[in-house]
Amino acid sequence: MRSVDRSFNDLFKGFGTVPIQIVNESRKWTGTRVDFSFDAKVGIVSTPIKGFVDVTDKDVTVDADLGWLERLFPAKQTQAALEGRIKGLLA
Image (cartoon, rainbow, N blue to C red; front, side, top):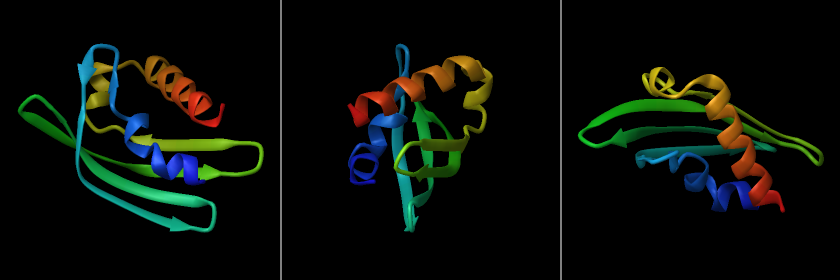
């Protein structure tokens, strides 16, 4: 859980060559689950992002509503990017 908390910003830092700035971040841990929300800024525009990360001994589950960013990044691409980053955090 500490790894996820320390590296939270890295999970959503950007996809491919698009840098994403995280602002107005909020996190609340309840047991092994952290609920989060923040605004993702890309250039001069921003969109609210919200969701949760649930950590168990064997799994890390991320569920996030990416707002209009879902239109820019296909779901499979986003899922693969997040999975890769989480595996990197746990290595």
